Length: 193
Image 1 (cartoon, rainbow, N blue to C red):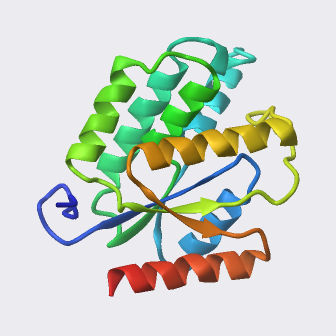
Image 2: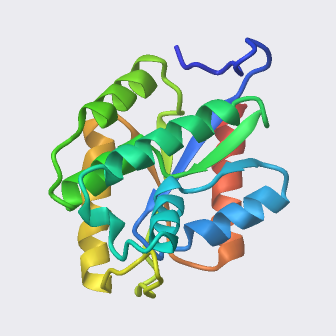
């Protein structure tokens, strides 16, 4: 049974994950969904990177506690926003953090394992995951220092992680932003009816 209640045990909440390769357009999709009234939850890794870079750490992803910092922020955001909207879209999840840890060749930490156990046992997220496909390029940012070729490998690792944990990938093809948003909205409508 999926944990569809908010923290007060009240109304039903459906939590969908938006994932894909870096630079695929997830944030743009999220902004439109937010403007259309969906509850959205920001990506934790970007926040962790920005915070640590502001503190003077150029490459926070190189330290062992990086993954645990992401996991802690993801859990905090998920539990704090559980009552915000009936339908929520999360920019990444702990399964993405598993893919990141695998990609960075970090061991899977106890905190990450525990969080994956929690979201699996409680079925926090819907089993259908919106997998946003790459746009054919990847523009570097302060938090995203990855080549397009490496982003394709990262995309593959994400697919493997989600499939290994039993999620169903709903492909969101490269294309116009409005078409991608419509594909997600149509899928959510179909899945919630």
